[in-house]
Image (cartoon, rainbow, N blue to C red; front, side, top):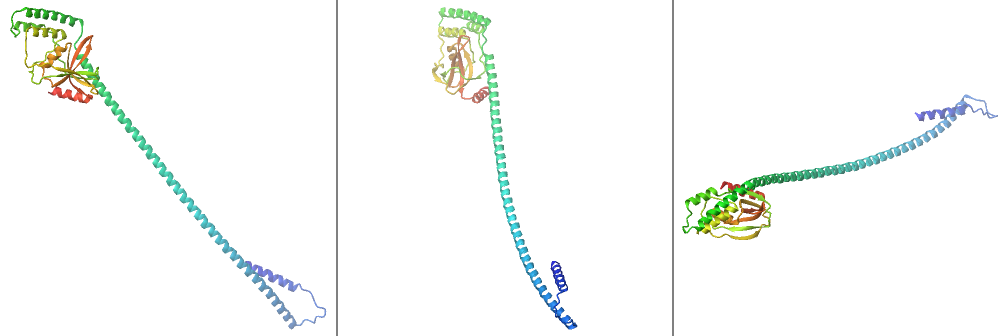
Length: 333
């Protein structure tokens, strides 16, 4: 369309120039039909030559425009390809960044979960241990309460009764000592009098006592071939009187051997299984000769209301559970 427009303009310009040419030669011959046709042919040839030049110019311009258009299209393709490459690289970079961020976040959450789980597990374990320790303390306090309840009462009335019985036993011992009889057997009426007047403290059930108050305990070695007699534990006053009575009557027991004692450190054995206590060490020894006990037992010296108190210990243990197990076995046997 632009080519035809330019061509029409050129043709009109040529025709206007042809028809507007009013130059007449002075000596021009008279126009004839042949001369007019020749002139028109010349004009048409010149006009055709001009049109050919214009067409060639338009062809060259069109080629130049095509070349510029192809170059521009190539540049646009390059720019599009370059932009696409940049977008692809940017997308890959963003994906790698997002992937690293996701991995880091997942790792952080996993570490936090592990830390929280470890903290909760540690707290639960500590809480369980504290609860177990609390239960052990409660059981120990109960055992100590039972121990205190089984301790012999110390009041004025009982002391007066003991003093009266001691006076009566002393008179009986004096009567027995002044007697000329050498019979080793005790008279029946004296035995009945002693049994009726003696104040006996029944042996308490074995109990577990924690944390020994002294650094050492005594050790007793008992003969295994001793006869088994019923346990009778007297107070210290009764023990002195009965010992004197047996000495004055020259009573002998061939199966009783003196116990060998020595001090041993308790070290880490802070729990003891106590059997019974006496106010007299001699009475404790006599009790060990009458009762079936292990070959090796222990004793501990304490102070009870200002008086020496000798406690017979069945065994020593390093922990509370072992002592409770031994106590359970002791009750079963």
